[in-house]
Image 1 (cartoon, helix red, strand yellow):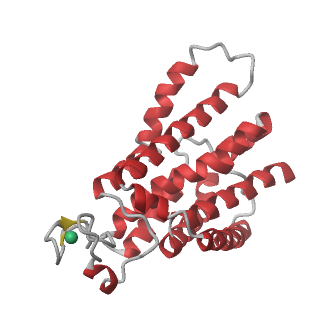
Image 2 (cartoon, rainbow, N blue to C red; image 1 turned 90 degrees about the horizontal axis):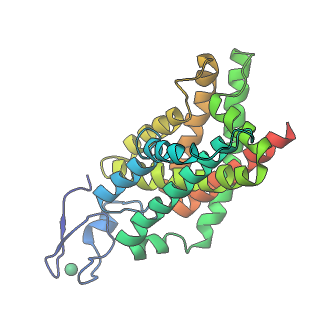
Length: 270
Ligand SMILES: [Zn+2]
């Protein structure tokens, strides 16, 4: 457990045990090396971590932002442009979420946050994890197609396809960049880092399952298609979490962005 305060052996200040150095006198945290703490993942104040999760979580912050924006967008007359209001709603929802999700770590643990993005190796590992996810999710989908041969996209993929074909440039920014960045900040830096204070395996499993279910639409007409596509999302959530535990946010963001760009290209290839 990483919730209890650590007392600095030099200045006796109490501080977060997930920190590598005492924030007051900068002496090394003696518990940090012995406790096999993940050195690459970004720990913020536990309340900031929960806050990030709630800001980006599909059923809390994202829902609220999207509802507020839909009221604004509905005041414009966009009926003549098919799918424009839903595209703008998605784009601005992710834009606002991403800005808030960047602001929380930037203003609460500036140095730690910036440090997590300065190692080139993290990005190279991220490419490796992206390739891994392409392979693993293809295998999972092949197995599911073999069990249930009439699949098809779930609602999440259907929406992505419609928007990508109607407004490819906006869709590229949302699906390829803002979406994966916001999701990594929400589910890895927010949720995973918080649960990681309790237990590593709990963090990996719970984050992957929640990540799977946010791509699952309970309002879909065809629930079978939602369930059939669920395992691939859970598995990709597992790989993103492992990438994050291994090399931190730069790695999992790289993996997620590249994977989504691959998926975006595949929309036009099929
Ligand atoms: Zn100290």
